Length: 156
Image 1 (cartoon, rainbow, N blue to C red):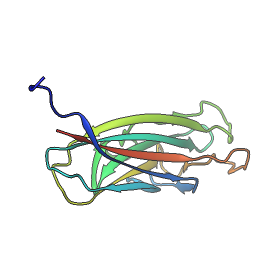
Image 2 (cartoon, rainbow, N blue to C red; image 1 turned 180 degrees about the horizontal axis):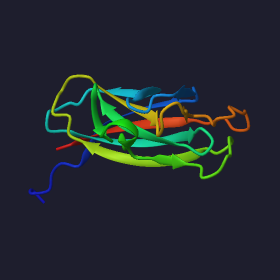
Image 3 (tube, rainbow, N blue to C red; image 1 turned 45 degrees about the horizontal axis):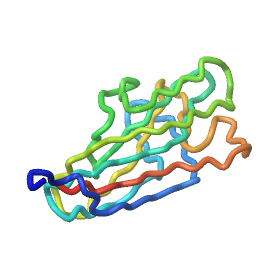
């Protein structure tokens, strides 16, 4: 039993938002407004990031999500419409009411005891198109969409 260590939860913080955002950027990330701060208690701690998001693209076009620590992209990458990310929404039809609900996680090693900000970013897949966070293209009020970010410090 003395060899067993780590894996204990140090702290949990969460942020939720029902604020929506949109962008026509396809070659750079836009801020979704979903972000959360955590201050790890040790440099050896890991941060487990649990995300639930809502994303849509304009008519038949795609959109994608990324994850940043500070100003560094840690989930997603590439350039132009190949930014990548965790979600690539594609409605597949001319439906302005399509909205993808997504859940994903990421285990990060920030290697710091300073306050650290994590945020969700998004982009559209094609030039002059649109991507939408927490809403669909029609921006109808059929649902109260809520996105959440939970940060869990995992002690070493």
